[in-house]
Length: 256
Image (tube, rainbow, N blue to C red; front, side):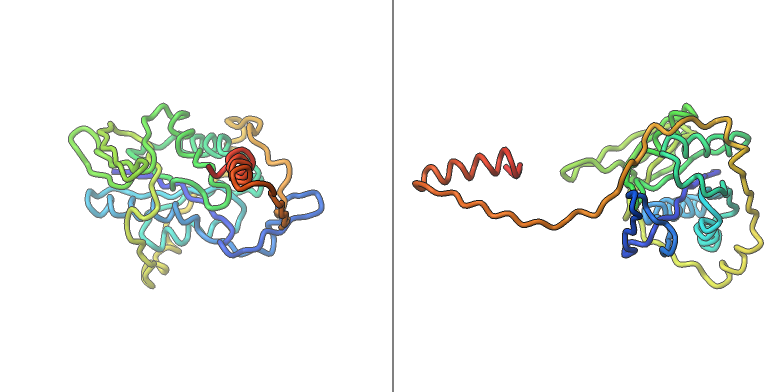
């Protein structure tokens, strides 16, 4: 099977949120890492390749620093990489990132496309399903298990309250992979050396620009919540105090 894995570089989990006076995110002087859900998507793709053969291709969009995401994936066993390189991709919403990916792979034929369930920075969980819509492919989310079947695949989806759903799907298809689906591997020393010689195709913004549109989602301002403390005394007979407290918990605090 030929599998594409969409990956993203995100700030490290313990990286401080730095904002300028206008409320914009300062992305310089911050340490970055592979988006953890995407690491599970890569691991599952590599395991499918080991079972059934084929090729694993990784793709990302971002400035030159995002190349590290691809290098790590190649060191773990991916066969080749595609880098949509431009700092402008950082400002794109999920729809435009999906459009850019679709344009970059239009000449290729993949059996499966994997993404992580969501990104650790914004957590919108949209890129994979939008990409499926653009390609006209079936998709399934929150995947916990993938088995090859006659004429397609069978997937196990995680639902709420401990329930699961088993779905038969045709190929090609797009899947968003749940974190924890498997145990992540480490890159070996030989894998790191081999990664330097594996194919890497760079795609300029101008090459996918005709497929893009205006962002449908814009973040106007970010801010760090201010800690506040407010104490309100409720007085009166016990029955009245209990009634007023229940009303506040239900209507104001919204925990009931």
